Length: 314
Length: 258
Image (cartoon, rainbow over all chains, first blue to last red; front, side, top):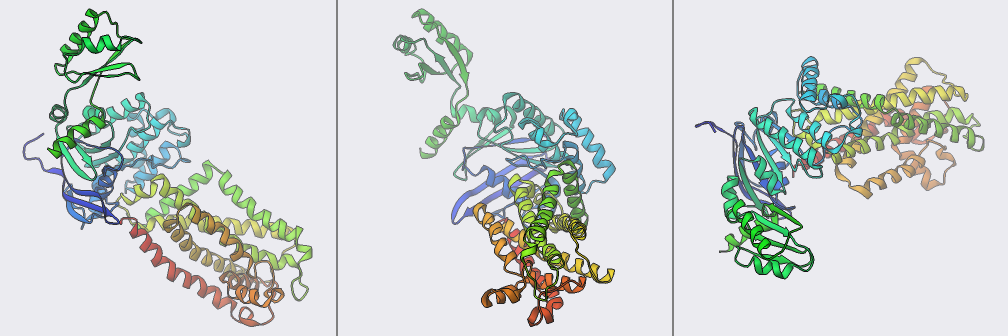
């Protein structure tokens, strides 16, 4: 990040209550220009409320925020000129074609007809949608819709882009495409605030992750720092039937060993990274157990919350 | 972006939708013509208008008024669909004047009504309907119908913003008694006293009767408020509806951010 660069988003103490119940409870958030910030949390954590408040769709009950120099409470129009919003549903006209959607929303954003047409063609190319450009959006796959949805927000080159769970419901390939689009958007200088329920998504994309629970910030850190706080990755070994006890005995000396009889798996903390993986395999081999499958995975959101709320309680 | 320009663009969007998916507007038009055929041809012979005038002359202005009422549900459905799809939120998060959203809707809805009028009048002509009035009077009649349509735009917007699922369906049902307990199909003089009073004060009756007067068609009323005051009432009812529902709709729109 460039030294002295002003933050594109600076929010302090944002609070939003529904019938007295806080959906957002004093959120502080800062985003430097061109950075990607992941807002991580389960359903009901306040992620979408945070995005809707910052995108001027909901009025906060308390707190303040500045977006690209515009005050959220007194200059909503200024904020709107600086942001793009991709909500949880693809907010495009199903009947119109991709190109017609792009031209329509560009012109609604004040772009002239000629520039709108040019910008639409450019974005269709960039998002690999040329072949489908003149088909009705109703014929698009989930991934194509999502890309079109993102393209619509880029028509006006926003300083800050909100992506509310951009990959929920997408297949892995579409997900990868959205990820690379998001990286490129940030690379081009637009700051991105993305909400997600997936730790690996936040980990892959974000420069910084804020974990939300019940409308409050549980943790906010760089992904690596956060992951250290959350504990190591887990090694999950799927075992052949009947070898669970042997395997458990063989893995006794490792950190965090547990077995799941129902799934026939043993889980070990990968405290030493890949070296632990090699040691686990060697130990199993010595006791004559050949794993059916081995995988290294990030802590799940459940485990993250357990770790973070444990720390809160301490 | 000012409201007129964004409204114009959103009306254009609706026209593009009609071109890409003509089934939707066509079904709408078929429904209007079907009503004219059912009531004009099927029931027409059995309905007597006081004075013994021909029923088709009475029916056409009435049905024009009824399509205006049913137009309310296209407003409501389209606004609700945009809200559900997140398009309303997208527009709200853009630096454009929010009145443009309703103006765009209104432009498309009024245009659709005008097309329905043209079609109903054409089919009416085939069935024997004739106007005995100057072109200016006919035009004024059509403008009165659009004026009511404009008022009902706000009713549709208000319901779309405030009602959820089943309540919205209920509005579709409520439209039937509102449409039928009026002078659209039958003269109030042939209704039981209680219903006749309701029908006389129904805003649709004022417009239907005023349009009949302007078209030189049988009005079915020989005395009472409609015979005397149909034209002023046809101007005032929509004004009153707009005066109440425009601010309520604006309030409901602002409440979206609560």
